Length: 170
Image (cartoon, rainbow, N blue to C red):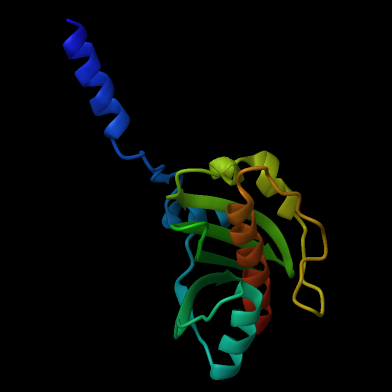
């Protein structure tokens, strides 16, 4: 009996860690919710070389995408963007109205730690944030112990979405 328990204990100790691969909301659901149940036709923003330079500064790494998809209705836009937390991408929805953030929401989280950033107690800090002339948020975002990289990822994506919103301004 003790050999079985010992063997099971060894097996459990040698198993690889389980990663949180959670989808909390689909992109389609986020867009629909943002526009009160109506999904406008998606648009594409083609990025120039100059755009990529600014985006690389905001994101703190090279940005290679050629275009980004977004949804727009009057003075509102919705962006579904991804950024690496520590090692894995986080899918983030950003809803903007009149150059201010209405909502930031983690749609999919794939890291093993730091998923506290998906909770409203954290994401509500972005409400009404706008962009300064230096492409920084005009308000402070408090961090979360143990989720530093995820906090940075959401903050960078919020800044990027606000900057992109200015490019497609009506």
